[in-house]
Length: 453
Image (cartoon, rainbow, N blue to C red; front, side, top):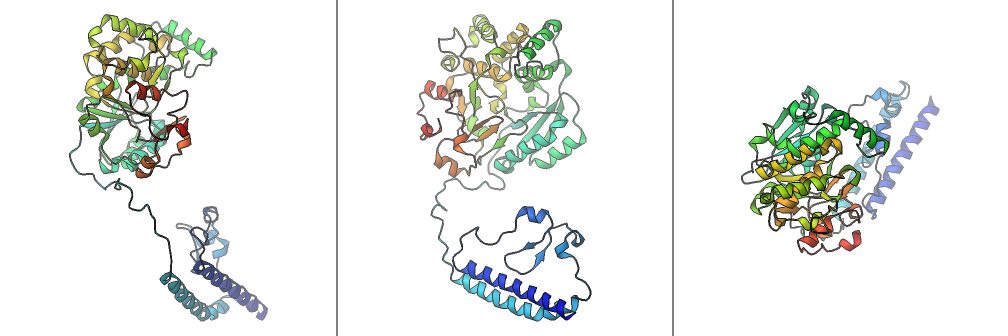
């Protein structure tokens, strides 16, 4: 019995010695992050936590003591000994607390020289001023609930918690209770759920389905991405010609398209919808690249046929230079990546755009090839809008597998609290078309772009 008490006393004194050493090291200039920090893995393993030298073993919230051997109750014979040592423990704790207070009083922490240099204020709980007639729009299935939840969290934390814009979700089936309850809980604005008309999600009557099936088989053999997918083709056709005509979308003038599993790396401390309206922009992008040629071999032929048939829809001062290297004879395959778009719905619902979509649709390339909505939107915007009506959001940092747009310019990244690595920026990669946009519009390339090539 005496031996047990002696061992416990040794353990207690050793523990107190470690605590004293901790406070001495903390007061003698140990830098931030160099003090004792309990590992998250240790907490998860239920091993308790020494909280900043308090001398107490704590259990993570929700964890019972019986799950942690360090916190298990001591044998009955040992308990009186520990109780007898409490006055010494309390005295030592008081001494250590006084020492800590003295250390704090003489702290010489260096100030942050950049603390007040940022011109961008933190996002307010709710931004002042009126809102635009705008919504986020997402095409998703019930199985996408956790991937789209990640996207919603990104958009809400970086922007929409201060603006509370609506969110429209569209699905070719009914949304289930899980999808609705989870997404509703995550959004700060109103959520709305719509089912896609079967006439807009399927094969139109004029498509030869046997021919379309053979195309899919051929693309599968050639290992063309999504080459054998029917649903992907329905999605591309729907995004190209119908999402903006859904009855829920008819109430809005502006949209911001959001896909599952995207990331926003920077705060968006202004209203992009308002920016677009005030600056007479109608379409925008953050990433651009070359389309996979095998998916659109006759798309430009259909486009040239449309231009010949409808010259009235081709805008003066358009972006043909972005789309073609020879004045429109051939397509260079550059397009804006449409999984991010902020755009004007009235333009998409215009006669010019509808005529363009219907012309392409009748040619059958959505099913006889694998035309994507990105080149369709991009060609339409490039031909029917003035080049100054298309905007590049350098300050909206964005990721969708596998490409990243990280704003070029350290000052911009710091002001907007960005957490992306500029080395991951795709903009100045040889496969990107963004440099063409700058050259076409005679815009100086951002400072520092050379470091990201």
